Length: 295
Image (cartoon, rainbow, N blue to C red; front, top):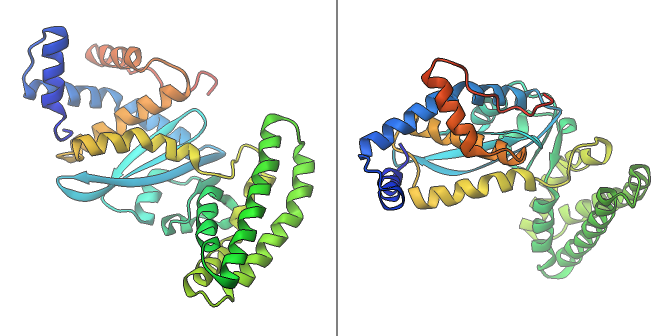
């Protein structure tokens, strides 16, 4: 199960509802719930893997006191989680399967197996890098400050697209020269004397094509905020529980996080869903689907 959770659950049930339950019973209920959720979560995973665009991210986890990683892949209506011992491409492929849409991520190398034309790099991460360069001295600082200005101008245009005050056609026209200026600045940065700043710029130039997919593909955002938001609750859980005791506990974490995040995206009640899923399993019926009604 999840480390440290069972005693707290038992105490909460006793204090709030006067229900006495052993730690073993809490664990048994957890596993019953996990089994009931297996099929709808797998259906949700297949839905995400077939989507036109998703956001993906990962954060640290613990299983049996060993280092592990919690991954998430999300559309606008469904989010699925995976606990995996590795942080590389093997884990990314297990999460994403044969996904062939547009993948929005940070620059972590695990996502390098996907073609640049089908990727979108997170501009929030890029902006943080460029702000760091801007704080360096001499030419590197000047280049960094110029990159920050151009990026803020891009976001100002993008916010107008999102609120409907600028057409996408106009946005594309305005971004074209801005894109050229950013590329020129990165080329200058790659040749500057500050070794770390130059290395960052060289790396970003290699991935430059993946910075601009959102300009031409509707439904793609220039940041990975959607996936990062999905992980925040999980990070708080990890800090309180320190991870999971077993693979079975990790499967429970994956499934309950998938249910909670997905139903929140769809404005559906998670408690009602979990009760219905468990009741269905007890009489041998399939659990309700996690997919949006229109799917």
